[in-house]
Image (cartoon, rainbow, N blue to C red; front, side):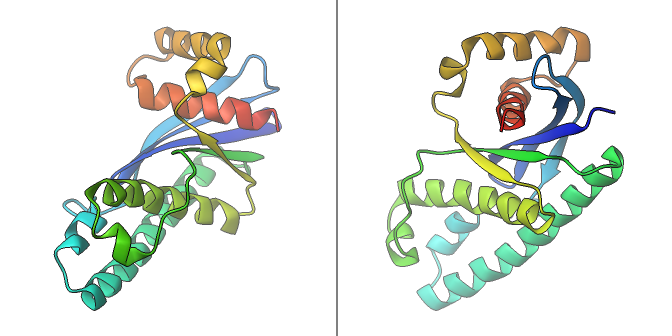
Length: 184
């Protein structure tokens, strides 16, 4: 197996698409792909649930959801590492705009911020888990990823013909992020 391996993640509410690639950076080889569960069914939108609670209750609820999400991220990482049989050299997590979130009270008063906070909630669990496994993490803004790397995106997209489904936008962008992470 190649000595350089990267995992790419594209997070959603309660789950993430994960793609593992190896290289040297060109051309990459897909070693695996999976759907990583980060929340129990019905608990994929913790900030939406907390929005209707009294503030102290919302804080406690989000702390509990964080513990649960961290445990699920840890179990997923362990499964990926077990399947690989070796430690990845990099991890890439697709991120949002990168603007810092305000305090919880302000988040819970804004539906737009609630959506942003939920995305960051699940990405943070992935970042912290990778860090615990001593895998360097790179957060890559998703918004213009395919536009900034058009040739690589075309090459990643074409891998779907060889791999078969699922090879949707989630897997393509997670693979592209992992490929960029291999570059260091």
